[in-house]
Image (cartoon, rainbow, N blue to C red):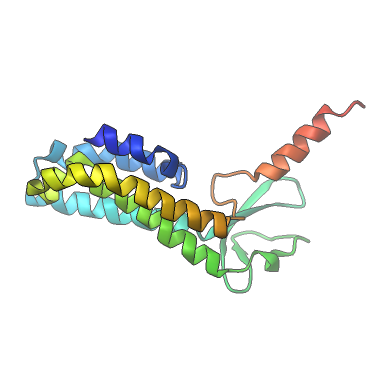
Length: 183
């Protein structure tokens, strides 16, 4: 069941922070005791889901920029612009203001992660063991529905954020072009 849900969600999984997804997929079988949950397993698994959900949403509100020294700087998006832990130098951080699209992305990234959690066999067996027949229907129907909705929203509101751990693709292309030019 888990393999089918991951296959159906593979294009959507790209929208999730890689580290968050990796931690969830690594710890979930351990914390759910492979679906044979006690109360302690349910509590620990709930904490894992909550922390991973927070990470998914938080990543939608991070961005990066290239500093004056050429290094990548990261920060949190606010109403006034990007808030960084260091000095921005001469870079104008006000252009990184919080937008409605950030909230829309956060909701849909959370929907994608929620779909993954809901369709995970270990989580299903742990929290709602009588759900097996309905789960088969959901595995077939939910990923395409979430996929179409998410793809539509992400097409209408494309993300211009380059959150924690993601280098901007357009700068990489520019650097590649500069490197390939004859001297």
